[in-house]
Image (tube, rainbow, N blue to C red):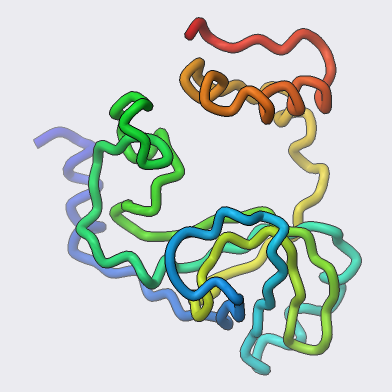
Length: 178
C-alpha cells in the first residue's frame, strides 16, 4: 500500500459531521434550476443571526448547499450538462450534480437581508435545499481570475460566455485547441 493510501485509510472510516445552517426557499421545487435571474431566499436558523452581521456590505456571496434531491448513485464519468455531444469526462472536471458528495456551490447576488433571511438572485438550488455555509465574494483572488482557463470543449459549448469573459478580463485570452 502506497503512502497516499495509508494516509487516506483513516479518512475512509470517518464521517464528517455537517449540519445545515438554514435552507433555501425557492419557487423551483424539482428539476434543474436553469434561470439564473430567479430570486430565492436563504432562511437561516436564528442561532446564526450574529454570524450575518456585516454581510449586507457585500454584493455577492458564495452559497454552499447540499443537493438533497439527488437520488442516483454518484458517477465518476459524465457528459457535461448531460449532453452526449460533450466528451465523457471525470465528474471532478464538470459541474455535474452526480458526485460522491453532492455539494452545490454557487456565486449569488445578495439583494437584501432581513434578520435571518437573505434574498438572493442566481441561486441554482431547489426549494428546501439545506444550506451548509456562506462566504462573501471579495477581490482577494481577482488576479487569479485573470489567469482562468477552460478546455476547448467548454469554449465550444458556451461561446457567448467565453466572449463575455474575454471582454471582462481584457487582453487576448486563449484556450487550448478544440
